[in-house]
Image 1 (cartoon, rainbow, N blue to C red):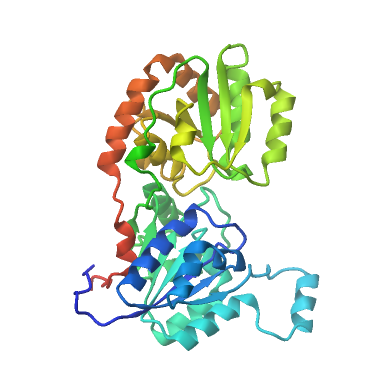
Image 2: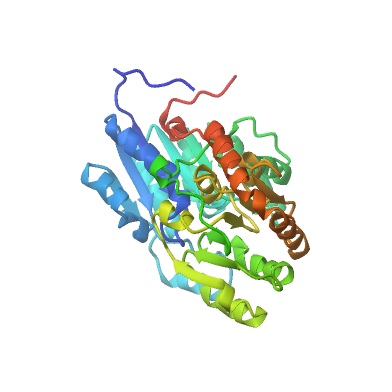
Length: 388
């Protein structure tokens, strides 16, 4: 990729996010940094996001500075008699067509797609048909990948065509890139791994907290895919008879009621604190010794490198980007797969060496500092030329 020269003319870039059914989150980090950098150099921007995302202060600031912001909602699943009847009775454009129409009006030099899930383009086929017909280049950010999806053969071939036709596909973890190649039976030579910008700052590093009690933190949206329910069951098995420990659950989400009920069912309520959303990393890590990231499917939980840079070791399942950051036994503990027996075994191994957690946290900080590439979002707005 070649950088734009300082005297290069401004270009027209469209940013389109498919995270239409989640609130603003980590999956919005890369594209917003890129959009802000493009606007700062004078580029014209079209931003197509959900109504909720359009209200976020960073998107509102882009709009105030001249970006065109258009909204669209989650496309309705193309199944069921009721859905077909609603479409027949509603003659307006379907949500998936709105993006294609916006691109046709804006005529971008290239499009940056922010995919919440790697195969989200299946919801946006009209837009991809417009790209193909117009010859407009596009890049893709793939934020999340399911380890074992069920793809119909037609969808697999369409996904291989869409991802293979991009100038570049930026995966947020090596594992997600490799399992996508496995899913699609495609080499994807245009696939790269890119780092999300982190919210971490050196001032976020807190002194090592006194122990006991030994405190394990989870920091994530509270939903099934984050695997926190598995961690609670593992804790009941491994730590149930141990004194002086607690789990601090940071975050909000639709799974909170289930997690509270799980804690009551397992008799763990006195060992758990639900802390809600806490924006300051220093506030999280001034009282906690270890991050647990027991995700079932993920891209890269940014909480992993953030905890490491805050000098805390990490216990994580080997999904998404955990393997890009952790060195097992040195900076943390890697559970081979998100199953209860394996997670319990990993937690047992971590608990057995808790006296080493502080030293592992220092090693984690050094490793993360060497690994982290904070300015990679700029690759999204640089001219991108495929090899012949």
